[in-house]
Image 1 (cartoon, rainbow, N blue to C red):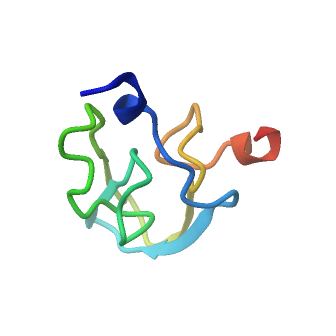
Image 2 (cartoon, rainbow, N blue to C red; image 1 turned 30 degrees about the vertical axis):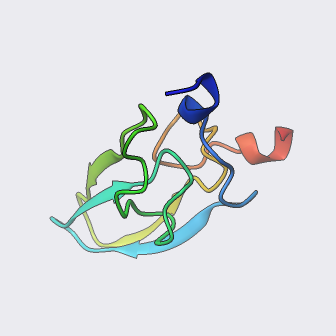
Length: 83
């Protein structure tokens, strides 16, 4: 694995607004390589990066990070504004 492999790829410079369902578990893509953004499709294998698990505590809209730079992963913290 090269040093570059461990760096996430920016999927988009904006959050992904997602309607979540209480009790459902979501796996947020931390590597940026997934074709199912913002969720994991297994593309991280070999990168040293792993998805972040989130189980929704209530129904509603959440803003999942698209730039992969958030300090509050899996959620957007506005980091995309500094890229």
